[in-house]
Image (cartoon, rainbow, N blue to C red; front, side):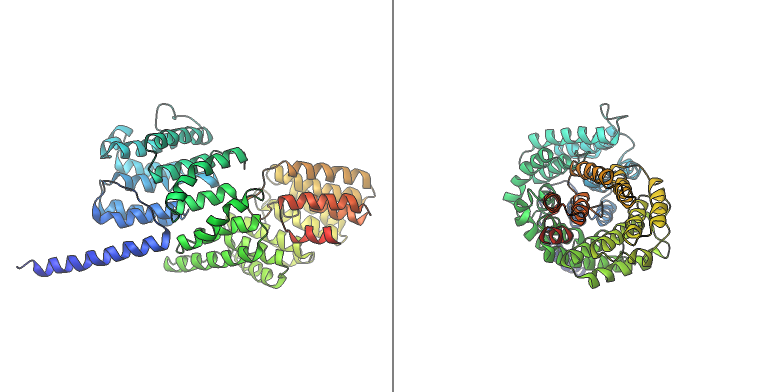
Length: 482
């Protein structure tokens, strides 16, 4: 009888724990992942897995860490935390951080395998050994080669456990992560074919909705992703990335209200979470970038300016490389889409030519200078642009400026020829799954130049080609309708 108060307290505590798990189900989606971990560690483990599906990797790692601290022998919690250091669709992998986690479970593959309690758990854990290059056939391979081998491993697991939704979802993601050269429709449709089985059986599965949106977020296939886009924000309202992901489909279809609304919510959810963690709110990042672009496509220049202002204020302090990159692309979109060429001088910054963000920064400066007749400033910006890291995108933007300079010198035929070739090169690139990284799309620029010299039919053809890649883009539509 002396233990009765303790028993009552534990009963009440467990009741609250059940309520909390149910609440998490409503906030991040619904999944079912049977495992041999301790019951008291399940809530954190399940939360981690859901965050993983929602690409909230830092929160996923924190949840998995809590689960393994509660149950130090919980092999799947180590698996989850190690997996949080691999970001397939962003082509990022922190192998060292992942191995730090796995080595806490065991110093060798054999030792780690001994900690997994079932054959299924051993198989799932072994897939990470392949991903991080710890098996005989994966050791010494590049990340890209390991991605392919991991995909083949996940295919084998899917065939062995065909009714396991988590394995199927991660198999679908591994297929998407194999598209190292950019979007390839065959790869994306193969992923979708696997993911539909999970979506059809559990339409509240965060991974199925999320990865299907990625499979369909291009202008050709976007209508297929509308059901997932409309559902995903309700499936995982606590995940900022889930709120944003709906806009992948909306942008591909030119649904600007949807793009704006989704990224306002994503930004606010992210900000609330950052305040909880005492982190600095993101004002130069993914969601503000998409939000600004949505405003610009609606012609809401004032709202776009407010988003860019906040970003500019941040980069005047001590910005990181991600913030600098986002500022450069946001500045580029604002200047190009508003045609406020003087704004390039207002929203200026310091850019090391060796950084990725420098490409759009110097490109925008060069274009704005040309539009204002400041040829010497344009040439100076072009010189800086040529010093930035080599890439197809940089070459395209460099050739755009070179073509415009040729025409400025009276060499119309040469300039148009170079601009046409530039547009053809850009058209051969995989379609962006977001706002154009080349802030002035080449076919749109070609259409404007052709229109200025009176070649209206050719100009309209160029605008139509651009609209195939960027549906309902405001400047292309205006050019076509003028």
